[in-house]
Image (cartoon, rainbow, N blue to C red):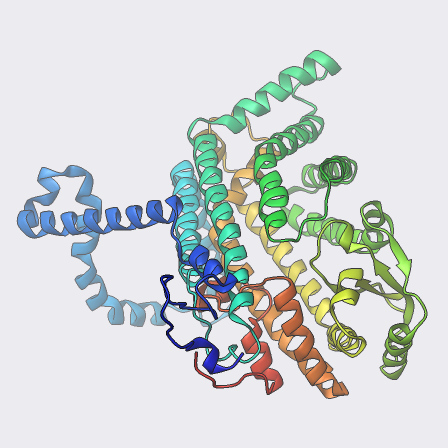
Length: 553
């Protein structure tokens, strides 16, 4: 689109002058008004943020007026007041404290052992006195507020109607605005869903609903199966099924709205209501059939292996994960999609030639009917050792040329060639091992169970509450994994470029961005925290793409 399109001459007409398109009634202007318009949700967000600023301002006024008498007038503020008052002294003593710590460092194996013992005793004592319920609520709300703030930053970007100059040469205003409208609809749903979910979590914790459900499951287990509380593993499996069913019911309205309102409004949904519920039932059955024995095995290992259970539990989960990687594409995914051999022709020949050129052990080349549910597109590689398979969505074949699809396959083979999948698998194993080790520090803390109103120490509930405690650290680790994943994407892009598909890959990335109505101009902090793939402009820059012109709007 040329620059002159943005500066249409003013003509004598009773209609208002066009701001974004070629005429006052253009689809571009209509779409721009939709994107710019702020609804009730935006008003609520602005009101809450303004209210928080007002509260902060009032607090500052009270602090300025009352000064040192603030804790006396408002006793609830004393801990915060004392903390703030101690900061200057703490900061001033920091160099001396660091020097003292350095002098106390262990210099031999005996001192190191003693230091570890003392730290372990201190940690155990801290775990005995930790206010678990308050910590869970604090962590939960802190993460919710952080992620909501990031979502609001992203939402502000989505309300913009002017394209960044970096994409103006290959993304039309209409396409840009349609992507932003789609992003706004998803953002609205996500903000409401997160808020409702946070209220649900708070009520569950405050009113001890998890122990109540645990007790109710035990009562029904005794009534129907004649089993008492000694059968903790059976009760845990039944509890898991009950939680899964409740979660499905609670999330169902949001899933229906996302599929049949948001996705349909923007031209993506291809599902019927029957297919939607069929998929849901299949997923529930598979979760029970696979999840129940895995959970039972996990709990059995913990019961039988003592304080070192985290090593055995990790080994079990590693085997399970490898097994699922093998059976998912061959046994599970065909329950939802139809896989056909890619028809003979130019595309198949080109992919087979590329695989042969890279010595990729291609065993099967499939086309999957992704269009049965959505017009989103994808391609991926799976399989172990000498039994590799490539799967291409039929939507990708419809949207891109042969060279562009081969470029995408080259990108996926770049992940294989550079062992990205194996690296991510190893990282995942370290994460799982760390989680189980951390849980081993909490599993016998009776104070944790009591703080949530639980009689006894059922492992299932202990692990559930530990996950709440682990949430902030888990988010930090996921951020690190996303950083690693984005690095891998750049490397896979470079691999495809070195094969000679740089221009075709860039062209396909642009097409997929347009077809999927992906966000063209994400907030940098939001994308850094959330995205596992780099934004389009960053990928095109790395490819040295000539499309990235410096044209101004």
